[in-house]
Length: 296
Image (tube, rainbow, N blue to C red):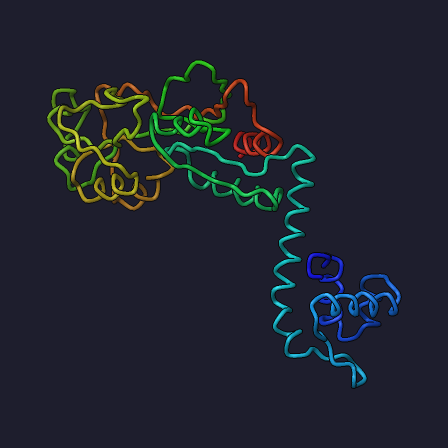
């Protein structure tokens, strides 16, 4: 008997509870009261016990009916989510948008776009990988995401297409208490080579053994941008940072910009690009996400 239970019966059951009467449930569902009553009677016949007491003016849930109410709500919500997802897929929208983002990308811009994305695509979950160097591209090449936002990696692999998003200025910074901060004029390369440079560790086999922006023979390799930022402010070394990430530190004197004779080989900043596999272009949500990053 239970195999014949329908979503429509559960929807009617919940409406009768929420509206307080069969007639009010009928108005909400745009059905005659007699149809509501017959639907609920059929449901009660299938479960094998009454769901409502009908002795008073208004129907009242039985103890067994109350016990089933939450399960009915959960089942109905699941079916509604299933239908919504099916509609999204039928329209060609991605069931999930997965994006790998370079840690150097300005977090304020990313946060603003993600907030708008949540409003524009409420039924599409977002998964973000935040990585550095070759690790940014690994989820894309492994098929775990459709779009990668790269900046600290100068090369785009074969089979990928890229489009320019924006430029992020970068600066060499150090704590004002560090010996390098006391030096006037351009600091010569031999001096920089003997000072500890804080760099991000490359957790990817894609670029293993390659150095980007490394000038010093003494390097501390850190797996986290937050750790690098904290170590710079603590005076443990100097490092190359995206300007938006350290603007507040520079304004408040927690960090100072180094005047280097020769800039690291990554240049004056990071050129951010959106990359995707040529054979798997981004869908509507991915295209919207990329375009929003361009216009921020």
